[in-house]
Length: 212
Length: 169
Ligand SMILES: Cc1cc2nc3c(=O)[nH]c(=O)nc-3n(C[C@H](O)[C@H](O)[C@H](O)COP(=O)(O)O)c2cc1C
Image 1 (cartoon, rainbow over the protein chains, first blue to last red):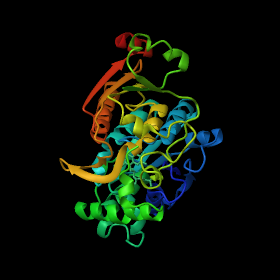
Image 2: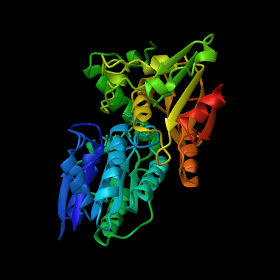
Image 3: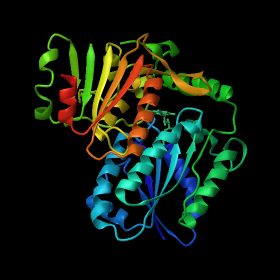
Image 4: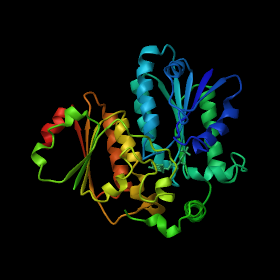
């Protein structure tokens, strides 16, 4: 099978969507050709849109933005719908690998619905979505094996997604939080993420509250 | 003050505000120059309160929201979402919130930067919207309202922009 792996984060580097795709890759590499697409680095060319119409599977990895799909990826989907309507010749299955900033992965449910609606319009099959909460934790968990500790739920969901992709079948969407207490995540993100970044930028924590 | 974000052509929208001239209105429309959010969180940790992408005219949306009594969105409804331009504007307004989290009713949201609330009114248009798409769109607006601390949300569906104009006048 030809499988497109589309990184739908707008971050040019170091995206959580990229981390999730790299976890999925070894699970679906056997017997398939994987084609990475990085619209986070530059917009897709017309040739690339046409290529996507010839894939068996599209995997969209993206962050939740305003409870939906980030605007640049949404624009890609609008354009791709046009291409699919004229160029698609085979059955295509779409899978989503979503992550969001808030703790509860459940908050990805509206983005899943939007993607299902897109599939219906574009004439492709919706396969399955998985959605990880507290996505910004992923960067600091690179030593943790998938399926262990805080990545226990993610492991289970990732294996389920890989299985659905391998068999090009539909699966239940799995939206989950990390196996890590919410209060600790909140404390850690304030101290180690926002305040540390502020200090690196020469700001004090109280500067972050500035009103314009 | 009312802020209107719309995705219509300049000529299409011209004349819409005729009767509301007395009222203060700020219109955010597609100048063709808007760049996309890069997901850098600079609006929280580098230039708190404003977007780090300067010079395209869409860097002060958070501050604009903080002065708005009503945020009115006029958007094509696509797959149950706003259109790409409206999404882009919303994505660029993240500075309206603070990075800090608060948990209410078992869900995490951001803390507000401003002691302020606006009414959120969304006018979607589209001639062949499915029930599913309308349902998704309603859920989306409700979730946005919750995250933006809106005082109330109103969602309307119209078959064309012209119908929105008639409804508003
Ligand atoms: C403009 C913007 C809007 C966001 N909106 C939400 C949101 O509505 N809910 C949420 O849980 N996280 C939201 N986030 C957080 C991202 O989903 C989170 O940081 C994610 O881990 C980024 O993934 P990436 O590294 O793959 O881009 C938002 C982030 C940005 C920059």
